[in-house]
Length: 389
Image 1: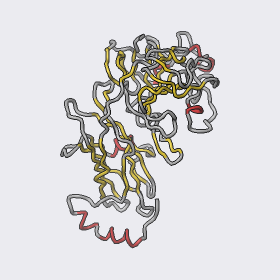
Image 2: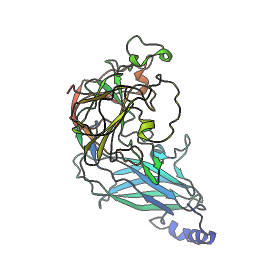
Image 3: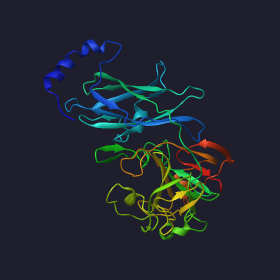
C-alpha cells in the first residue's frame, strides 16, 4: 500500500459535486479480486451454495477509511443480484472484524476480506460468471463504487465421498457457512501465497443420543480423560480409494480442554499432529487430523480402498478436545493449499446443535427424526449419522 501525491486526490475530490448528482457514484480507489474461484455444492440444508472470498484493498494511504454501504453480486448479465448485503450483514462477513456495533470499513492503505456465501435459488441455472458491486463512502461522505472484480465460476463438480468415520453420530462443528470460524476464517500466508486450506473443513465431534460429547456420568470437566469423550478411539476410514501421500504418528495427546503451546509453524506436522493424507484423485487430497497416538496404520505410498481403517480418532496436534478434523484440498501440504468442496454419498441428518449443548449443564438437545441425505455436505453445527460401511 502507498500514498498518492496530495494534489491528485484534491483534484479528484474537486469534481465530487458533479458526480454526487449522477446516478452512478465515481469509481472507488480500491483493488479487488477473488483469489480462488468457487464451485457449487449441495449443503445439508438442501440448497446449492457458492463460498469464496472477495479481497478489497483501499490502496492509497491518504484516502482515509472507506465505509462499506452494501455489496451486491450479479450473475452473468442478470439485472437482479444473487446476493445483496446491507452494512450489518457485511459487518458479520468481513475481516478484520469491526468492533461490536460498528459498521464495516476498509482502513486506509489496508486490505479487507469479505467471506461471500451465496445460496442459489432452487431451479436456477448455474451461473458462469459473477460480478461485484460494492458501494462505499469516504470520510468526507462522498459515495464511491466498486463495480467489477469479476470471476468465472468453476465447473468441476465436487467429489462424492464415503464416510470418514465408521458409523456413529457426529456434530459437524466449525463447518461450511461459518465465516468467523477458525476454518473458513483462517487465511494462511506462507512463502508468498495466501490461501485457505480449511475452507470446507469439518471438526467431527462424537455425540450420544442426547447430543452430549461426554459419556453419561462425566461431570467434572477439569478431571475428564480422553476416554470420557464419545468419539475417542473411533475408527477413521478412507473416504475413497487412493494413495497415502503423507502420514505421521508419535505426537502426544494433550489433556482435553487445557492450554496448549502455540504451534511453531503452520504445517501439517505442527497443526494436525498425528495425521493421514490421501490422494483420492489427481490433485485432490483428503486430510485426517488429530489422530490417536499409535493408531496410524498406513504409510506414504500405501494404496487404500474406501472404508479401510487408516487410524483412530484422538486429540493430537492443535486440538482442544477429541475430534476428527477432516478436509479436502488441492495440495498434500497444509501451507499453500486451497480447500475444495465435497459431498458425502450417504448420511442421516439429525438437526442443528450448538457447541454449548455438547456439555453437561448445557441446554438440552433433541434429535430431529433421522432424514436420509445423499450427496450433500454437512453445514456448520448440524448433527449427522454416518453409515457403518
